[in-house]
Amino acid sequence: MRKFRVALALIIAISCSAALAAQKPIQKLLPASGFKGWSIVADSYAYGKELGLTEIYDGGYKEYLDAGVIEAAKQMYQRKKAFADVTVHRMKSEASAKAFYAKQLKAAGKDAKAMPRPWTGFTWTTGGSVYGHLSYGDYYVTTTLTSKDAAGAVALMQEVGGKIKGVKPSNKTR
Image 1 (cartoon, rainbow, N blue to C red):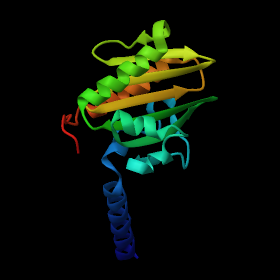
Image 2 (cartoon, rainbow, N blue to C red; image 1 turned 180 degrees about the vertical axis):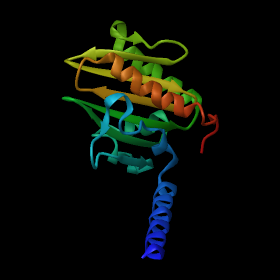
Image 3 (spheres, one colour; image 1 turned 180 degrees about the horizontal axis):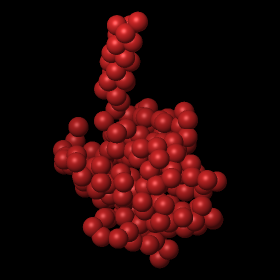
Image 4 (cartoon, one colour; image 1 turned 45 degrees about the vertical axis):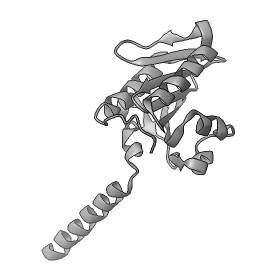
């Protein structure tokens, strides 16, 4: 019986390792369930690359392709009655991430609230929701919250940004 348990534990460990290895590297940048009270909504993960970006964006994916998005991963979170979508976009270059960020900042206008340094990011609140944008290296991160919790949006983006810091940005097209 003891050998059976050891063998079963070994099979489970190998299966878990294989599942983690199969994850897309960009998925690992998303916040873990339980981060600051946010839990992952079951079956809400989406990943897209090239034309597969239609899995991420509810219409308008061409704007993201034209902006230089190579791949993206999206996860939905819940904290109490609030929901948050966090999307990590890998861009073709740092310049394309900065340009897309500048476009979104211009669209937000005077309502944009800068994130605390050292981050290049902002939030803006409209219609009872808060939207967040962060640019770091060749990554572009967005959050959308179904509440006016700008601090929650900032925390989620900073969590992703902290994970990205461990990733060396690339300025070349992949």
